[in-house]
Amino acid sequence: AQSVTQLGSHVSVSEGALVLLRCNYSSSVPPYLFWYVQYPNQGLQLLLKYTTGATLVKGINGFEAEFKKSETSFHLTKPSAHMSDAAEYFCAVTRSYNTDKLIFGTGTRLQVFP
Amino acid sequence: ETGVTQSPTHLIKTRGQQVTLRCSSQSGHNTVSWYQQALGQGPQFIFQYYREEENGRGNFPPRFSGLQFPNYSSELNVNALELDDSALYLCASAGTENYEQYFGPGTRLTVT
Image 1 (cartoon, rainbow over the protein chains, first blue to last red):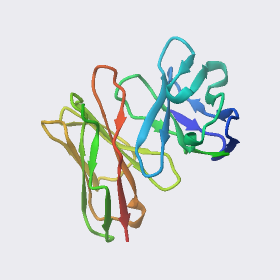
Image 2 (image 1 turned 60 degrees about the vertical axis):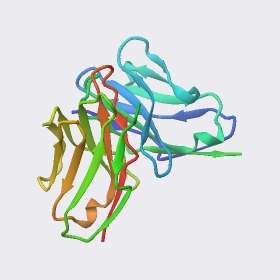
Image 3 (image 1 turned 90 degrees about the vertical axis):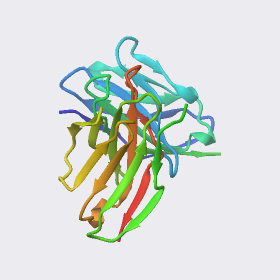
């Protein structure tokens, strides 16, 4: 069975500060990992994904994540937070890079203070 | 290229009633998945349709059912609504070019 744990339901940073959102996964097969962002009253937008190959993945809006198999982690980072980054972030795992169901974490709400 | 659309945006129903939610998939996509997102939670997989056939189901009771049409649009039907069915219902479509799932804006269902 697969699962995702997001540590910290709320994260607050100052504008310009480093953003670090944590995600740990459990999977009996090689995982495919995703980060989605959800703005208020909207659906989910894909930030980035890891399938195979390079373990450091770059996404949209300056975000990146590193797949660390030994730590079963896929933490999301951004060097400098912007006010527009305030949103809910979800980490998700699936068994294979096809249309298999996504298993989501419970989400981390990011607040950015001026 | 039109993205994934869902209707209605909001819906209020009474316990025991039935509801139908609709999803139009992105052009060229033949797979549709439905997710339920309760307040403060991550989305939970309900089921998936591929070329009009159910292609996987999550841990939801049979009163949650669906359809996919020849144009690959889809419906989610929920019978005998319960208060706990109040949630944001998300539809996601995917094609075969990269298998990435694209989400619609969701339908907010409130059951009173």
